[in-house]
Length: 151
Image (tube, rainbow, N blue to C red; front, side, top):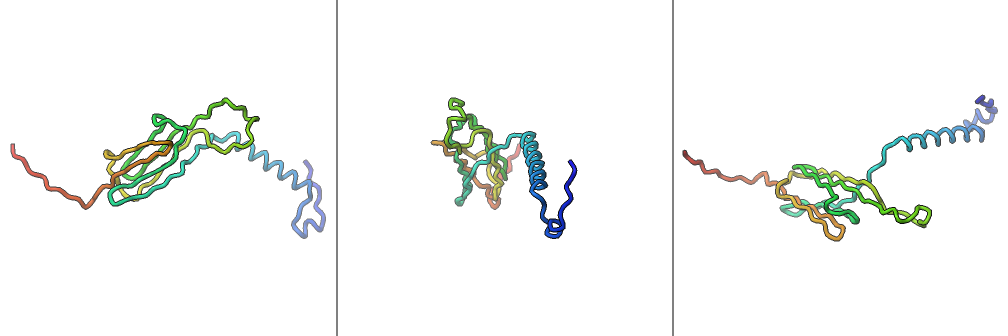
């Protein structure tokens, strides 16, 4: 498309004509739409509370609408990842909604822990949609004496 010559005033002020603005905006919208269509579906991110007492670190998150067997909690000594999927029952047509804010689909959250934990003693409990993960801290200062046995 041939560009119209800009007026002296447009060149002086740096402004552009309405038709140029519309052309630029249309091409920007086309690029955004193309990027959106080609992108993979996003995962939701869980909101979490992370706190500690003297012996444990706790992670709490809301997982309402997800069965405990559909949750995947992976832990290492310094990190916890919670994954799952909240499935929407398609019994209501999209046109029948007045307002829609609930998140449906896959979600995950990784929390880097402030100190190492005992992976084998960790526990996870879900009650009334609240997931509570209890992570016992490793005591690096703790030592023990081993008895040497003879054959």
